[in-house]
Amino acid sequence: MQQYRRFVSLLAMSGLLLIAACDDPKKPPQETKHSETSARVELVAPDHFLDENIVYVIDGSGSMSDPVCDYRDTKIVVAKSAVIASIDAQPPGVNQGLVVFDYNGGPRIVTPLGSGDQSSIHAGINAIVAGGQTPLYHAIELGRDMLLEQKQRQNGYGLYMLVIVTDGEANEGGGPQAVAGLARNIVTKSPISVATLGFCMTNHSLNIPGYTLYVTVNNPADLRKGLAEATTETLVFDPTSFRR
Image 1 (spheres, rainbow, N blue to C red):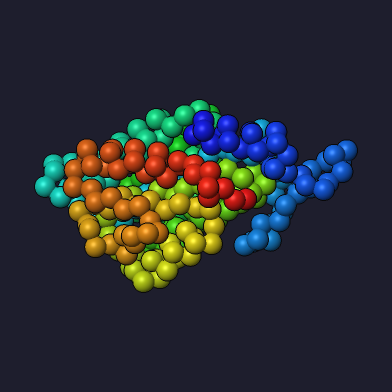
Image 2 (image 1 turned 180 degrees about the vertical axis):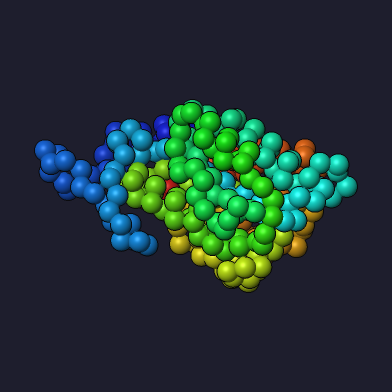
């Protein structure tokens, strides 16, 4: 990640990276327009243009109360513990947010993107109660929109990823084919990377080689390792692919 920051800093110093190209430097930065929602957003401070951003989508459907494959603990208990550990392992300054669907309701933003004190996101995860259907499509849309709005706030710069923890296919608000199409669209038409951790499932609609990172989870160690892989490899910056 430091290589990413150094690379962009060098571009800025050489004049190749123009954050406010052709603007009058005496004028304050203008608000940008969210291309999907037409909502106007306020830019973050320039020193946060390169921030990294992660949105976790946690499946709290009824089947998440089942044991993890042959393991004794339930999927939701294992998911809560592993995601909280992943959040706490991120370097200072990484913005993290949470989208959930469970017994308490459909897909919703539990914690907006932010850095610093993670107590609210911890509380949101611990409050998940397994129950209900699997509206993955709308949950992924919510996570995508959070990240795209943050992209506007960061003037098009930074890194963005969606990390999905699930144990089944979408069965409400859009089926598996729709979910696969949505994931392809996100990866090909935005800077967002998509990683999925699937409990006891190899053939999942989000397992799309060449588009998404997919890890099959058969035990708690698999999930911890998969989350570490997702939040490090997906945030590795390749200078040859730099684009705003």
